[in-house]
Image (cartoon, rainbow, N blue to C red; front, side):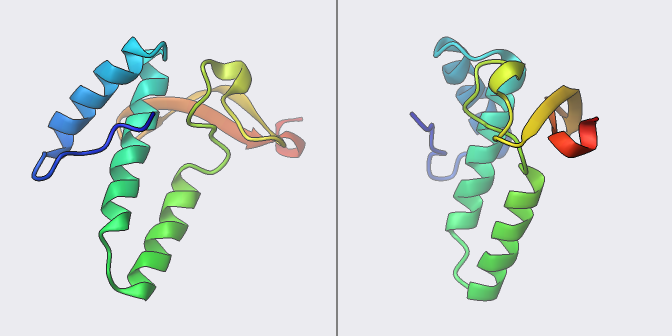
Length: 106
C-alpha cells in the first residue's frame, strides 16, 4: 500500500519513514528506496496545477523510472516486460535495478 507524504513533511523525513515501512513490508532496502522516491515524485507531480508543467513532470517521471517495476521484490521481477535487470545503477544517490530493453542487453 502506498505511503503518502504528510502535509509539510520534508523529503528526507518522508523517505526515511517510507523506507522503514516498505522494509517492514518485506522489500530490500534498495527496492524500498526506489519505491519511496517514486511516491515522493508522484506526490509532487499531483500538486502541479499548470497543464503543460504537469505533462512535462509526467514525461520526466516516466523517463526516470522507465522499465523499473517499483513493486518487485527482487531483481528477477524488477523490470517491466520486455526489459531485464543487468545489475543495479545509482539514481539520485540510491541504488535501483538497471533495467534495459532485452534487445539492447544481448
